[in-house]
Amino acid sequence: MERRARLPLIVLAVLALAPLVLTTLSCGRTRPVLSLYTWSDYIKPSLVRRFEGEQGCRVVIDTFESNEAMYAKLKAGATGYDLLTPSSYMVSLMHAQGLLRRLDRTLLPNLAHVDPDYLAIAIDKAMDHSVPYMITNTGIAYLEGRVPNVVPSWRMFGRTDLRGRMTMFNDMRETIGAALKFLGHSINSTSPAELAEAEKVLLEWKKNLAKFDNEQYKIGLASGEFLLVHAWSGDVFQVRKENPAVRFFVPEEGTVISCDDLVIPADAREIRLAHAFIDFLLDPAVAAENTAFVYYLCPNKDSYPLLPAEIRDNPGIFLSPELRGKSEMIADIGAANALYIAAWDRLKASR
Amino acid sequence: MRRSRFPIVVTALVLGFLYLPILILVANSFNPARFSSRWEGFSLVWYARLFESPEIWQAVRTTLIIAVSATAVSVVLGTTAAYALHRFGASRLQRVHYTLIYQPLVVPEILMGISLLMAFVAAGVRLGLLTIFLAHVTFCVSYVAMTVLGRLQDFDFSVIEAARDLGATPWQSTRRVLLPMLMPGIVAGALLAFTLSVDDFVITFFVAGPGSTTLPLRIYSMIKYGAPPMINALSTLLLTVTLTAVLLSQRLARRSQ
Image 1 (cartoon, chains in turn green, purple):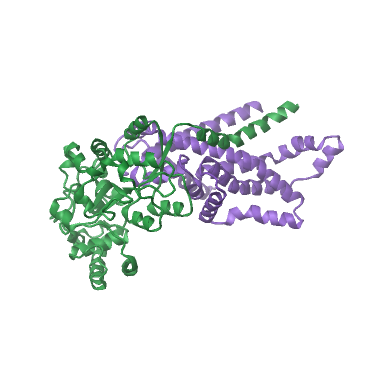
Image 2: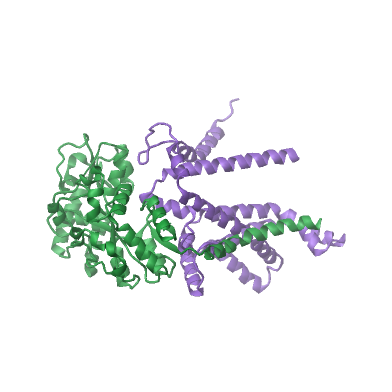
């Protein structure tokens, strides 16, 4: 009788101790572990396996779904990550807060492969604390055959015949930036007059929009609910695999180029391995393979000739020099942010 | 006399409301389209992708380890807490205890997540399985305690006294009288704790460390770049496993009767 009584207790105790035991076991491993904190499906898995083999280490990948969530967590004191991939604007914020480590350039010989044309518009031009990982262009995607008289310009959003079948980003800087570019201003403009002008344009455009949206537009475009959407190039090329009628262009007035950077947090432990991984990703052959897998572009000039023709000849991924000259990255504009927020609030509240 | 159709219509509506989303999910797991909800023919492509994704199975494993162990610990702690609250509920100390146990039910999750993270960082605990486990026990205990407390409310303690009168030791009366009578409450609390642990996103997000991504964390991050339809396939598989388990246990229970 008594033995039967003890069995459930033993089972309970074993179950309760499982996480403790597993935690200690994983600490006891001798192979060094590199902890990467990144977006989901943002690196080709076989490349990670190759790196593990070369370095005799283990790479643990954890994923976040927004820059802000990742930042909140690190800011609250979470540690243990050796390498992150936030977007450029978040990198400048984290750098200003002292959350990032300066890179040791002697450990990164492959920095020479980074595209200088891209660096010219980057925020951290000297690659002091960040290295560009993947870039994407903002543009317009539409369904061929359903939208007549397409002109490669932001003024498509003013087309009343497409009323209710278009979307723009639910993103203050992207959407106001599009209107600023349409008017020929910088997307980082801090002039109240220019912003007022852009706001007026957007108020007109808003009448034609179904909604402001960052995610659902992909589904809407694939199913034909939306005919023309404000879109990121990487997303569009994924949607196109499903609906071949999807077309993408970057407006002739210029656009927003976004970038996710590789950075090492200040409290990283595996500093040498983190540098080795950055250098590995900057290898032209690796970068080309990665680009072909995720459909975003590693700005690595020596990888371009190695890319499949489908990507290399795509003007939505590789902007013409003229168009790139007109495009910008979103920069931190400091106090002028308040102007944007006020304009954006008025725009969202308008009917 | 015609019977009213009203009850049948209401039943159908309620059942539809409850199960239609699940049916759509199961159907979509066989739809090869990733972005459109249009039917593009029967396909097992998402199942194939699912079995090629070790990181999803890793996340399933982590989730189950945490859920099972957090449930085990919180059932023991929650049941003893409920017993203490019920037996000595009138004392001032137990009133404080009640407030403390009740707190996690009303505190916003995000607050609990950030404060737990700050506590772990201050204590120098390495974030990982252990911290998620501790965090889950923290809120699961409350749910178990409340469920068992409900069961204790109409528990007749004279049964225990009778057992003692008939010569049972305190341990025997607990084990052979109290626990079996509380069992429905304990099982309900355990199921609730398990579900909450499997399901939790906000608190887990903050206390998770490298290499301890749970399934909800993985699914959330897949929305941006990944392939969410894989999750339809995974849900269908989990649903099948759960249904089979429920049916089997019902059949076994009937047979043993």
